[in-house]
Amino acid sequence: MTDNTATSFSSAAMRCCRLAAEVGCLFHRALKAHETRRALTDLPDNLLRDVGLHRSEIDFVADSIASAKGDPTRDPRDHLNRSVAHLRAARRRADNLLPQAAVRIFALLAIAGSMLAGFSDVSQAQTAQVKRGEYLVTLGGCNDCHTPGYFFGKPDKTRFLGGSEVGFEIPGLGVFHGPNLTPDQDTGLGAWSPDEIVAAITGGQRPDGRILAPVMPWHAFAKLTREDAYAIAAFLKSLPPVKNKVPGPFGPHEASTSFVLKIVPPAAATTGGPSSN
Image 1 (tube, one colour):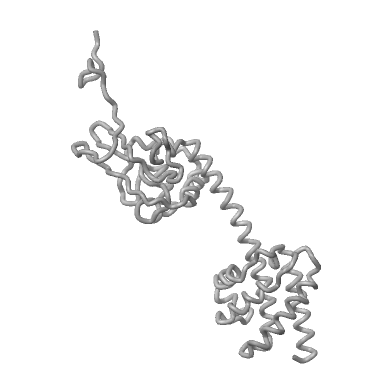
Image 2 (cartoon, rainbow, N blue to C red):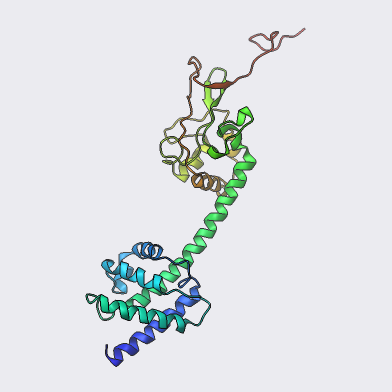
């Protein structure tokens, strides 16, 4: 490496390292090589081309970033010294890299740091949305009709919202069980998009076109704001998947294969309603 190249390298590296320190999390102890590798892999091709990085070099970049451990509140020059020493040693083991590889790596460090800071903001927003959804699901009583064991007085918390073994009989319509609301791919909402979940809880229509039974209070949920409806969808998508296919639905002339809640008229009642004196 010539003096001019070394000076250029050091100058570029220092600028990028300072930028990385500003975004706050670039050299955080929790930064792992596989996390960085994933972040860099997600970079668009045009951005990789702009900094002259080949996708075949991403593993080297990720390992370099992961090796730059330290307290992000310390002087960036300390990180620079550590990183430069590592990169020089790594370059001796990677003769196929171009002479400017180290400079490009530090440029990508700054890019990755900015991306990670953005990911952190997005993650915090998603967490808040899921928390809001949890609050609304709890307030809405979804647990009552959709968690196994609830109608027996012993809700199974390990299968929260995993679908009820007790169905509702609606005269003239049949028997309907509260379905599995967890993101299981085969028996729950795993294959449903957030838009489809919102359409069901606020419009009463499943992705297959079937209209939900009136025992599902989607008419009331239709009053939800768009933000609250999508918060519920986000919470349901965040649940641990439970594999549980509920029975039914059963038509008015079909026999149910499981427990049923029904309205039983008093002995004096007629088909037209309570008898009058």
